[in-house]
Image (cartoon, rainbow, N blue to C red; front, side, top):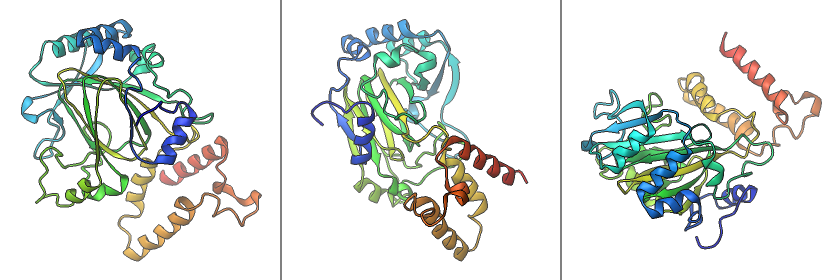
Length: 331
């Protein structure tokens, strides 16, 4: 998209209005990390070292036979990569020296590892979560030619390509069945990933992927490009150069006390999955009424003093409900 990227709460409003991925070309090209990378990979590495808090980083390695696709082993009895803690300078030296392995430093919290770098390289995210929203999470991703398997995140995402090039391939949330999610646990990086190898899909084993591909959107990001997309969109991210850096910012414009829906999903699997079909259908109607329809619908005909769990407008009510849920689970 041409033109400036919306900033702050206007960015959140833009995401909620478009509800699809949008690329803002060169929106971050003047940011200092991008300017360093445009000089050379070594300049970008020096920029990172100057701002690093001297804390060991988590390093993931995979044999080149994996094509840099960090995933499960063929038997799904483990992962096709290893992880260890190490020195940032060592990682950068390996990357600049052309290491044979696929090398990846993922989801490194800027606030902890590079505390001054996030604000200095913010493309316009500050204030995006609104007054009551949870704090924005900013992260760094770095490596050579690696692939982050298709997955979804619970948060909206703003990602800046700082060095190298990255290909984003994205799918709307309703394509989940056609992406054949892997195990809920364990996962390669915390989120459920697609079992489909997007570079070489086995359509005999995963025939629905052909339909998912019809709904896919793809974009290659150059240094300074920014992509923004809503929570829950599936996305694979492929690094296309021998040295790549990505910064991203996650946010949810909901009150800080709101719990993660992943907890709800896990409890629903335990409490609903094995019930008869007619009961599951009934509970689907109940969930639709209380959770997925108009938020005010279930309480509209009731007086305020009897709303109970239907009134979650303040953190104290949410805390009371959370305590009630925990007591029931622990019985």
